[in-house]
Length: 107
Image (tube, rainbow, N blue to C red; front, side, top):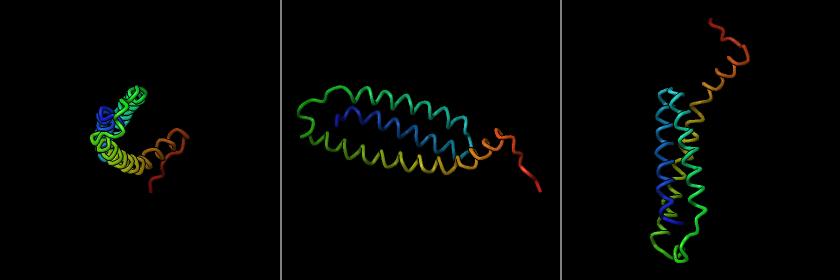
């Protein structure tokens, strides 16, 4: 893996962590904004990953460490994503109920 790509993964991780913080605060507008930033970063990563790697990259210790770092970052992103989804479930249900014309019954 090209170590330069690690900067994209790190930026996606930061955006993911920011999304989680916004979700914990119930700031769903911010979550959506940050999700858009993640989509852009992922697109840029895909484009950068299409560039050919140097032939020696596979044997480079720095490249091997970048692969390990990428794995750790991806695991943190997945954990953040799972928690964001868990926090979003009630909000999404309320939105679904509103759009379906179901009102909440207060007792």
